[in-house]
Image (cartoon, rainbow, N blue to C red; front, side):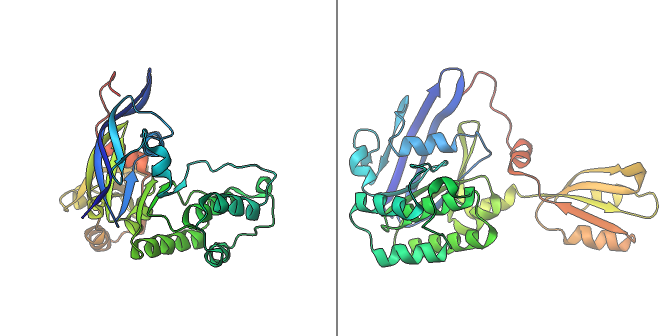
Length: 302
């Protein structure tokens, strides 16, 4: 397959502040690539470098063989872009924003734009300043998708969207891929990336720690489980189960807390065998997952 995005030791430093360091990866044409990491990991910096909005300190990046800094004008003609914070003239209506940005590209199908507005349930008559965070995001998504670009670069695209519009976004991504477009999206939400992406790059503290198929996310997914009993419990009931760690007693000894990677069936069966009276599970934040599975970058490193 043809590589549409390639980076080689891409680095951006901000003095004492963290940027990114030696980030190298490639994205194949026609795939959906998720760029995953906790907030502040370097996702937006990488995207701004790809967009030619920042000049790299060292290293290089190309899109469709074009240098993203030296040939940024040509690169932007291939792209649909949604920044992490989509801001325009607050006095313009949503419809005016879409029309203005559509005229800049010169290749917009108005019927398709109208369809996007309807599918995302946007009222285009309101001024941008009157929109909620979610509705501003809808305007940003429409302007990114509306000219059916060869490559979509989307920074936290579902931020502020309600669940129904998140599902509609997933459909738009699937349609773009089916039409041959490539999608590069950043996220800190595991289910979102699992739902939409073919491969993922995982970044933490400015360094790329893994690039692999989306199935790799199962390796870092885990649940924190608390199983309550009517009488004092014993951690060893669960400690020998596969994919279990950090087993301990809490709540005066009548509750067992543990970390479970992926499958909960063994925990459920064991809890039932010992007459559990309650079970609570939660999926930790991505920040917690990364703190658990990836060691911090040594002090002084970017």
